[in-house]
Length: 285
Image (cartoon, rainbow, N blue to C red; front, side):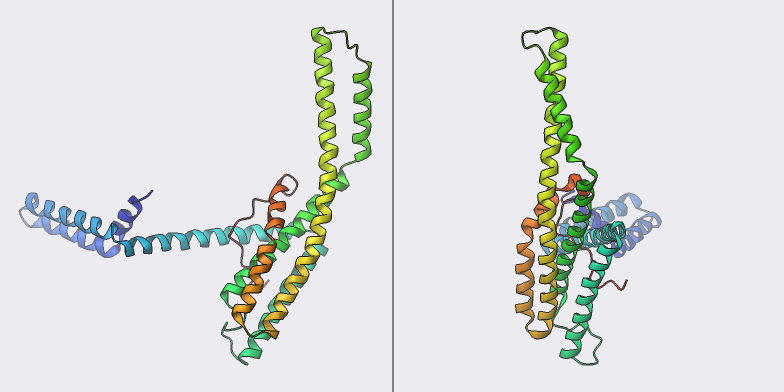
């Protein structure tokens, strides 16, 4: 869109539209519209050109567009979080809600310790810390869903049946006459070889899913304790910068975990993890 969006924003300003339409109306009743109207249009073009090229105006438009985009992304992520939580089994839902409410209660306690009786959000966990905790809770929720999806995949896939298919296919391949190079025999051999490779890949995917499931389960426990520790830190250390730094460190340590979840999209159906996260800590329900 480039420079065009600045021109459109300048033109769409309600005060500019009022002046521009008023100028055209005056030209129409002036008796010399052929002279006045071009002057009004020329003034409008000059105004749009000057304002659109002004750096501060461009920053304002960019910031406004980014804010709208973030709002839309946040709403989309919150909807995604709702559906993920809804699809989880009850024990996983309870585990997430318990952890989230623990953070909420500890945040309220930290605020009361710092400023008793105040309803203002002036606690140790400021907005940046809330965003950091929201990100960690978002990772935790996605880990729970990844665990659930992988467990279903592992439980619903029978490795013995796959091994039997591999054995039968290998036996059929062994029975083929290696000297027979006819078109039909070649098709049979290629079909069997392709089926053998598919079965072997299925077995490899199952083994990898088991390994990933173990990793995800360990990460869930690690992150759960990290989030509890960070929430408690907000009470024990009345130092916002220190707490924020600790949250950032934990978030950075989850980058490999986020990458693993992205790679497991085939099993979870979740979109790749990005910088936008839903507001989980401030939800009331």
